[in-house]
Amino acid sequence: MRIAMISEHASPLGDGGQQAHVADLSAALAELGHEVRVYTRRDDPAVAEEVTTRGGIRVVHVPAGPPHVVPPDLLLPYMGEFARWLGDQWEAGWQPEVVHAHFWTSGLAAVTVARRLGIPVVQSFHELGEVQAGDGKPSRTGYERALGRAVDRVVAQTQDEVRGLVRIGVPRAQLTVVPAGVDSERFSPDGPAVERDPERPRILSVGRLVERKGFGDVIQAMRWVPGAEVVVVGGPHPDQLPADPGARKLRALAEKLQVADRFRLVGRVPQADMPRWYRSADLLVAAPWQEEFEPSTLEAMACGVPVVGTAVGGLTETIVDGLTGDLVPARDPRALGGALRRLVNDKVRRFAYATAALDRARQAYSWRRVAAQVGSVYNAVTGARRKDSEAVA
Image (tube, rainbow, N blue to C red):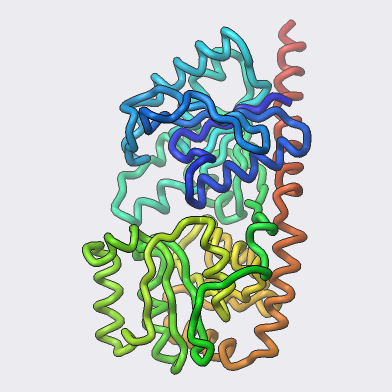
């Protein structure tokens, strides 16, 4: 099947969680025999119009908007231009049988061009505007509602995302749940690890330095985990950490609670280096207040690292409480600290959790399995579109 992935701001050639998702899904679909092209916005004047990856994926850079990086929230005005360029290209030559749009702005461009050409559209939001609104960003819920109703199918990553989509008005019949995958070759227990003090237990936490990720709760929880250190990976580049408001707030909290000597803020690291950080940890903590999906959880599990997480969103589906890790109430630093202390002090339980976590990541979240499920969605929407066309004829 000919598949067009629309990922306007997250190029599979880039470095980051969203970029990796599009790259890994595309590669897995190609391995199953599909022909995949990924369309992303040109944000560098020096980049080639088209790049072919080692896996045979053709990445096409669409000239829409200025040829430099633009924040995702400011890309909406360029989506009409993006859609017109796609339409011209597809009418003149190669045309996909199905379009899969990643993120809401990509979806708007996809629907605009695909409706004109009669091509079915599958939409993945990855993160809803009602969640991001907690970061002080403008709501985009109206666009997401209209888009969820306009496309042929929405692929949600978790049941929690399904509930969020239904809540904003997307029909339940439009939704199919397919979890995200994890690359178990890249993320594995075997390989180098970041150096650490072997005498001090290491707790790792990963993510953007926004309040709803719960890093403040993690720092508070460290009061109940004496002797252990917590390392936070994420946020801006290390050089920019001193001026970052989120980083400064967390450091001030650690000083106030007298745990600053056991708190380390690393900043953003290349995606290729993340396995080394996971392998260096005794356990991962993910303590968001609300969440659609937490990729660090799956990545840690694939590296054989047990997880303590808050019982919200997709974490309740990824973590099997008492088997691959522990779940605690959100925004409860004392409960979080208790769970961390128990796991830090129980080597046998950590080993059992790690073994089960590794097995679950490899079996339930392989990209080949995810690609097969997504491929079934493509077959369903293209089949339905053909039947509709035959009925009209």
